[in-house]
Image 1 (cartoon, one colour):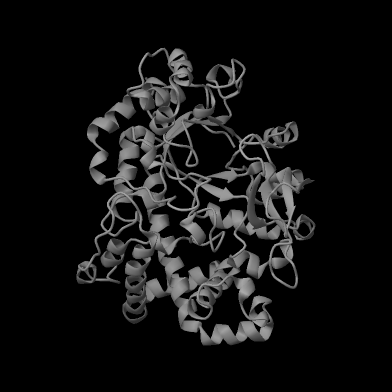
Image 2 (cartoon, rainbow, N blue to C red):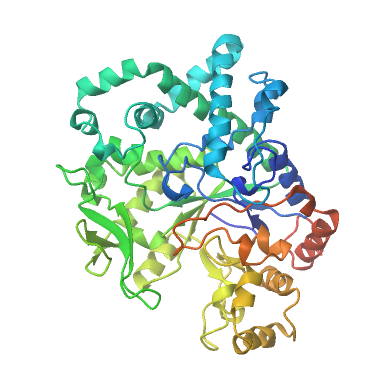
Length: 504
């Protein structure tokens, strides 16, 4: 689909400010939309919205289609009379600039349970009908997800599904019927959380769309092994029949950055089985995600052309092989389902001509990262004068990069001299704005920068460091930093470079 010249900010909702330990879909989310509108940004890019599992990573979720209940706004529940202000008085001393996920869950889940009990007792007939319709409309993923989470939380002490009793791990009809009966109250509670998440998110989306702002989110190519998706649909994944563990695992081969490659551990798709169903599960996934978003970035897009498959008993990614995937057939089917495809391809890393051909056949925008532009000579494809087309998104950096100021501070003077020479500046103060201006000035249809870069923050504000096992996904900003001065400065540059609602 055509992408107009525009710009926006990358900020995951968990990073929003607020008094309950984690960003949510309440007043500060609307205030951020107002900041976007005031600076004429037309994109709010976010990370996957799913319920996070190990390491709190939004790329390792318990469901590819559910929302994260921790994002539900308690203040909005008060407005809907499902909680009272008195319920929110005993708030722990949460960290100001970080999310303590464990403490947030200890605080919020009991309050969400209380709101559920109030919903059962006091909700209007209209609201209960909406809930019933939601459960019916989303049953294709909601039933399995709610049962999965109920089993993990109430029966198996958060153990992975392949460690459950064999009858329920393999989903025998008798075991499914038994637990759906025994856990019916918990199952309904988990469905209620998804209903509330959906209501609050769609209200925020409408507010943003009414202000000419599109919500731009992520679909990770792979899903977590310990997820409702793999448990409920193990036939479309490469899973060992006896152990329930992946028989083939995802990753990338050894390269300049890692002598042993990266072993992600996600199960590989059984594409032959998927093709037999016209990719039915994937089609459902896209429909579910597009209920919540306007645009989608496909993370690890190259996996649709060929993927690195590693035997399940390997400890590194070295002994894998490239296997071709039916990307052409997949996107043709998706085009039949959706018409125009509102997709951006994450085409970073090991990209072959075949991957580029698949991207270009369907006119998917790719990505350019300015942090990658300055260190390999005049023909570096990330240098703006080598941008030979408009159909891509240019970033200062992404959620996996250091912040721009952190990146700059970690470089040598010799390395930074190349940046200064290109930008025409002699000092590094304010380099974040220099790179933001450079991104805005390019011929790319879309320019996006993390909020951390707008604020000029250093490495401490980094969202994710891929090689770091803990402490990621925690950064938050304080409400007072979104000043009128910051808004007006961004608005000025946005208009200068022809990306605003009004042109210069």
